[in-house]
Image (tube, rainbow, N blue to C red; front, side, top):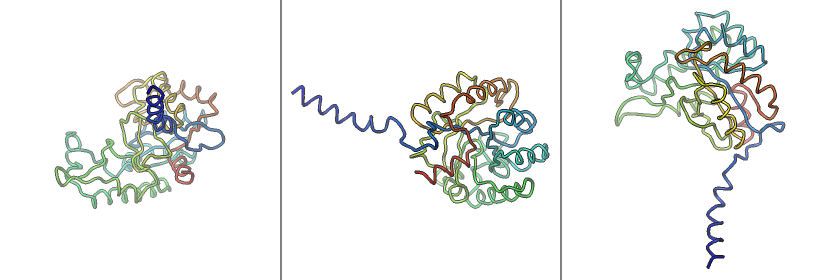
Length: 261
């Protein structure tokens, strides 16, 4: 009876053991991947952030709203020249009207045609300003819907048709490249986080062979929605000694995932 019970319990454990780690084939002996991303196209990203990234030879993804680029246009042109990736973050940054500041561009009042135009127009503006056409997208406020109540629709399919990937916001876990929906990549907040807190996410991703997409807004000293430069210096020095971690923009890793899973 005991032998039968042991056999039964072993069978129950097989699915858990089988899926305890991603089997995705990272390149050149890598064990995991990290992408650093920032939203909105805020001036601090090119005035403070890209000089630090360039110093360490790290390329990031910046999801931009076209109107924000004009405040530091030369800095953004230099970022493109230094091979940082420019992603699409919509034309007007529509979010739920439950945010009072978003009431005049509320997702509840939009439909899929409106969103399609938002993304098309933003790509056209970004191309005109920076000479590149984004292939990656980040959902403003991490929200993926239009309409309200029984009329609510997901605009994830719109993003999936127009872009290689779409990144959400305020998520709790990295992405499994062998399974994840590229149109809904998880984005883990790095604003306000210490290096110790970020390292915990990295260790989880390394153990399970995952892709950690970090997401932020401003770059500088402590502040609301700000990735701290102190943390970035510690993180980048750590990554210099971690050859098993692949650090690259979202588009580069998305392309690799598409080709290898």
